[in-house]
Image (cartoon, rainbow over all chains, first blue to last red; front, side, top):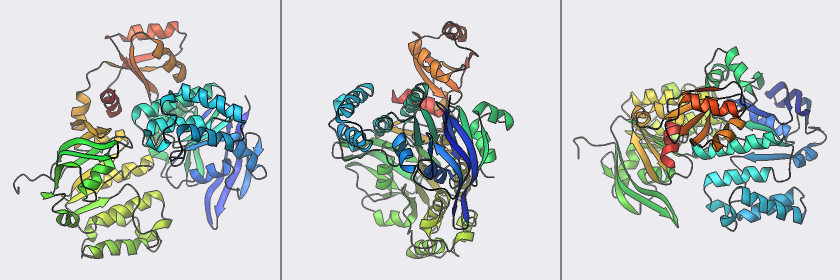
Length: 240
Length: 304
């Protein structure tokens, strides 16, 4: 398997403040990589650099084989992205949202049609395809948003707190979709505040004050910190 | 009314927005000095209920009293006596930390100095940044400032709408420690959260979904009420485990819970039978053992 994401001493400074401090790691293709850290640890800044939205101050990084400095546009076109805060347009219907994002990612008309049908069937959303997304229950919206993030068959998908605020059953349905995507070879880069979800990742990194303090499988991290759960590992590390 | 007055008393409150029934016939009491948790996902109706109790929204039907005052007739009395922290950060972004706090003290006719003892523990962590604009604070610090502003007039009741949403696990734990200390000051607290693991920090909890209360109990009482046989299952591959157990004819529900999967079965199936089934499916490192229910197990059982 190849490398999907690589960062070497990737750094971002805002004036005198170092938000991301020389982080280095690799994510393998098809891996579910959990990116954890306290609020303000630098996760969002790191993610912005990896998704081509923010140019690093120094260090190297590549995503899907593209350079984070010179090929930011190519990165954006070749990744999927979903966040809890913004995912879909509430005042477009289910079908219009899918068509819109298909268009944004440059899919052909026929492709969009085919994919829309398949997606509506898989999610069992045919009966609500003409409803505004804003009127759907949050759980349906989030599952739709995840599918839309994968519409253009990206090899990597970035998920920023995809399960925030959803009910416990939907939370697990989303994780099953994540597992399924990973089993099909999609690399998943995911942040969460639910520590039980850290257990679902193949490997987990924990950021503290701009640095990656720990990076390993959940099993090895628990062993290394003599902790019974990822929650304990996190509590021990996150305050630096 | 004065004897045994509840901090909050809600009777058959109902509120719709168009076709959506946000709060559907909700009734419960919060006792004086109690830390009461309203637990449910986004869209469950938590915020609407808070807005009704904070006298910012009128119910369609039913009635509620806060500190003995009616939420419709006596709104002015209630507003003076409660501290309300909305889910969305609602302080003045372009005032500094100190200015926000002074402002909220002043509109309630008091001063920071007069009530400093209430906020000392929380505000001392903000003091190094007291000249920073509120809009420039990190999420955790905004939350501490909002709590300080809700406390500065010495309210008898705090209404905290999802104070820990989007906050990391460590900051969440610190926030609940703060609530414990505030409770010690004889302030009643109604707090909502989508994080079910926070239920254990409350005296009593109400689980809410689609505008309806699913259960109201102490955290221990809720867990004891879970009657289904529950097994924790683990093998080398969680994804395959989920798929295979969904096919198992004895499976009622199969959901991942951290490193284990929680399995409920239709009949009382032994651990051995489940392990045998997984062995036949070619799983490795099979582990099956009885599990204790969590608040999420209870919530999922109630919402199905």
